[in-house]
Image 1 (cartoon, rainbow, N blue to C red):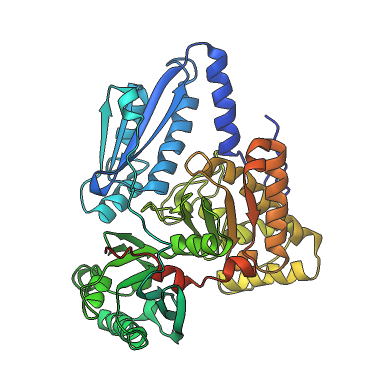
Image 2: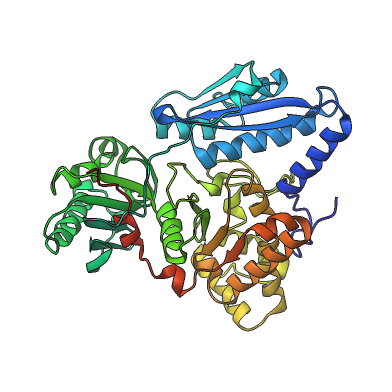
Length: 459
């Protein structure tokens, strides 16, 4: 297996390459076994994936290992509370054991059960063709600028709000707040309502409210959200889950859409560039993702790329939260830089926090330390292979990367190496998509203004 060299991580085993090589092995076997998996989520929606497997007995360990990673990826990209498979009893048995309590994927099952508020299930079906079809959200979310709108962007250190009328921003403000360290949910609620009312005071009326907020939101409800991490669990359920719904009611009975901030970032980039099929990825404390389709609509998917595996190596680094290995958080965040620093001979042990450790490496990069350069080149190679893997689950025309890891020369090195990797290994993909850091054109639509465009006003 040829692969682009990862200078500081020679054991990196790209999932995208294994998938391609596995497909080749299946064709050469002359006996492909049709297989389909479906992830079911709220509202009667589901996402399906179909592929051919090697016949049972040919290389079962390889098949199970690859399909395990693919199913987990589909689960975290789309979200859902049920896995249904057809075509391979062997794979079904593996997944059933993995996602039950005590299994290797129980973290994933428990997380999804919390998000969708129902027990997680793994089922077997027998009609591969029927299971191959998806039912996605066809509702139009985003890029609506008619009428009088409030757009709210809830950040961890400041909150932004805009009053928008027929696409023109009449008023915007940023207010410093401290939601992540405040345990009283009334503090959060009062801050949100104050922002809404301030924006409303600059509009003749309010026709719709859109919200961009970190976390997982289902039907405008906060299911898991780092913004409210200090709020006790019992108060989270009673005071936080419906916080945006209740705050909007203080303004009036108007359409409300709450979306993950990664999705709204992708939407803002798409609106600025006037292109669809945008995958936005923020490399910061973790890896955050967002996506809009060809019509610049948010799909209601999870896009939790931090949990999506990209490395098949048995020696890949473990994510402390999920307990799994090879997942995006250790490849596309400050953790990736810190992980690679020792191999580059850069000592970050004297820095107290991950953010400070990142700054140590970035300082070395500013000074043109060739070993520091290798860190970001390695991340770039990771990223090129990861984009090829993500392309199995997204139709991508444009990739935008942002976040503190991409600041300065680091972002340019990541993009350069990712492009080289795609061009070498996946030239067809490379010709179909652009990889960039957001420029001023992409940034011209602010996050809160993009949030304002989320709801559709029914006339």
